[in-house]
Length: 194
Ligand SMILES: Cc1cc2nc3c(=O)[nH]c(=O)nc-3n(C[C@H](O)[C@H](O)[C@H](O)COP(=O)(O)O)c2cc1C
Image: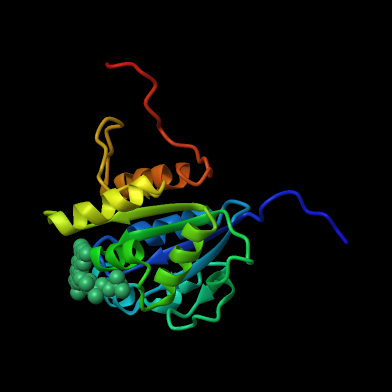
C-alpha cells in the first residue's frame, strides 16, 4: 500500500447569501495561481446575491473552481470526513449559515461540509457578514471561536493605503487565506509609520 504523509492541497470554498460575494470570487481567483485544488459550493442565496452584486453568472464563477459541488448534493466527496482537505473558508458567510454551522443543523452542502471540517478538527474560517450583530449572532460566533473556528468578518484594512475597492477586497481575501496556511504576496505591515 502506498503511504502518503501529507494532506492533499484541497480547500473547500463555501459561498452563502450574505453581501460580499466578491470575497468568495476573489478567493477562487487568487487560488487559481496556486497549487491548491478548490472545491466550490454556492448556496441558492449565494448565487442570487452574487448575480445581483457582481453581474457575473453562476457559470462564470464556477469556472474559477477546480471542482464544483451542488448545494443539494449531500453525497459529494466533501460531505465525508474520509475525503481529506486542508479545511474550508466560507466567504461570505451569512448569519443563517453561521447559525446552521453553530448548531450542526444545516440544510445544504455548505453546512454539511463545515460540519465535517469541524468534526475532523480541520481549519474552518468564517467571513461572517452582517451589521449590526444581534446577541444570537455574537453567541454563535463565540461558540464556534471557542471550538477553534476562525471568525473573520470581511472588514477592510486601511493601513496599507488601498487605492481601490479591488485592492481592499484582495487584501481581505489574502488575509483569509493566511488563516488556512496559504500565504500570498501582499503589502503587509512592517512596523513603520510614515
Ligand atoms: C441582496 C441580499 C443581501 C443579503 N445580505 C445579507 C448579509 O449581508 N448577511 C446575512 O447574513 N444575510 C444576508 N442576506 C440574507 C440571506 O441571503 C438569507 O438569510 C439566506 O437565507 C441565507 O441563506 P444561506 O446562508 O443558505 O445562503 C441577504 C440577502 C440578499 C437578497
